[in-house]
Image 1 (cartoon, rainbow, N blue to C red):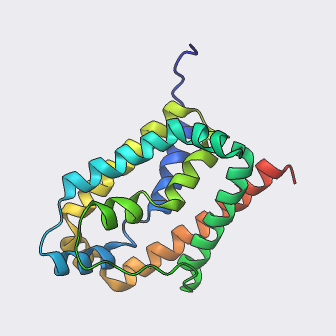
Image 2 (cartoon, rainbow, N blue to C red):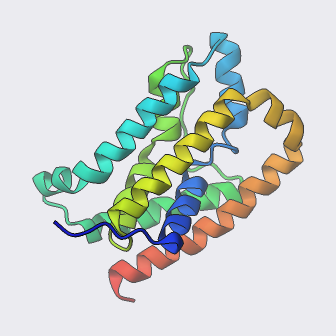
Length: 191
């Protein structure tokens, strides 16, 4: 078994990439809407389930791909395209993916797909082609701590940042995601 190698730069990179993909701050309006419909969100449960989904996919995603005959590099290229379109949504405000919010708040709309959605899971396997697993794992945990904090404090954060602040943050991370998507695409295609 290979020894663990913690690298601050890798932890920082994976944390920032996941932060941008999960986009929990940009999801505050959705979370507030879901909270109004249900009356209450179980922040702890949603965070734990999302964390479990991401960790399971980090370790078992490659095996699942193997069963369907797809290699990690092909998945990473597909992931880079998904990340690209998510980034375009963030920057331009155009919606490529349309999801209807369900009437009740439970693990399904909040933990999956809002927090641990297709973009996050695709990103995890894409990151695995460039970064060490232990550093990605720390990035996941750091993000989930932040997600929990945001879920517990959505109303306060909305007042603090304001609509303009949330929009600026969302667009800034969108540009970062565009660069990440291009880098992942180039790395895995050799272009």
